[in-house]
Image (cartoon, rainbow, N blue to C red; front, top):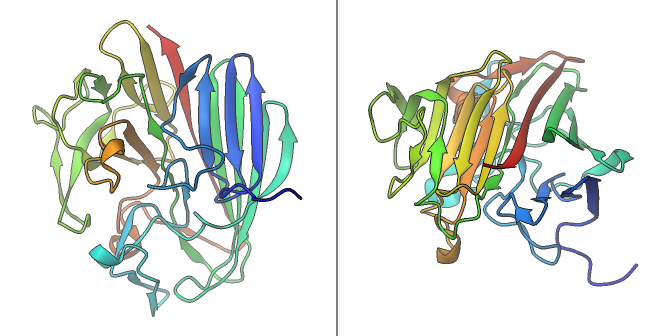
Length: 309
């Protein structure tokens, strides 16, 4: 085995026509996705470590959990504070875990991991993340199965950053389906909700992002006849348009313009679009929270398309 090893572990390439994607061992994450010569994702290189959750899956909860604590089945649980500055547990427990290839074809790969019981989450999940390329673009299907003896709380999310080929996202146009946004405190924990209609967070009709700062969770999503909600980021000219679609299992989506990222060069360079099955802090609030019985599975899909307008 040659050294040094890639920080994100094994690199798995899948190909379909002019599309290429790289999925990695660490977190079973999506490192890059390229259509023709366009880098659809603001990803990272094979020799780099993932930062800012780029392309990672957020399981068994997305976003933040206040104080890392919650009550389930009559017991208080305490998770490590993985966002210590805000005293939160953030983005689940599998981002840095090793996933194995369960199935592979030239245009498809399924990554598998078993999340074993631990302090704060004494439950057991088998997680499979399937990445596939087709003429319709990239599709990501996540299945989580409770393989333990107890019922367990569950939520899922993903954290791609999409790019439309502009150096900054300010001149790009954004269309997003949220009719309601979650209000949040300085720790990123929801405190209420408000309609987006007519406000600076209303992107249901495509418009330029400009100076708008987004670190905003949306729900009550407008959907097409196929049940999908769509977020689209497009270059201001007749260039590239990148869309992220969410099936009906994803009731929330987080949009993030990156203004608070620690690396100044990455701020407002791309748009974080985070499908979420539940709200931030759902282990405490119950908003969108799923409870899986022993042997029960949950499956949800989202994906990305890229087109030249």
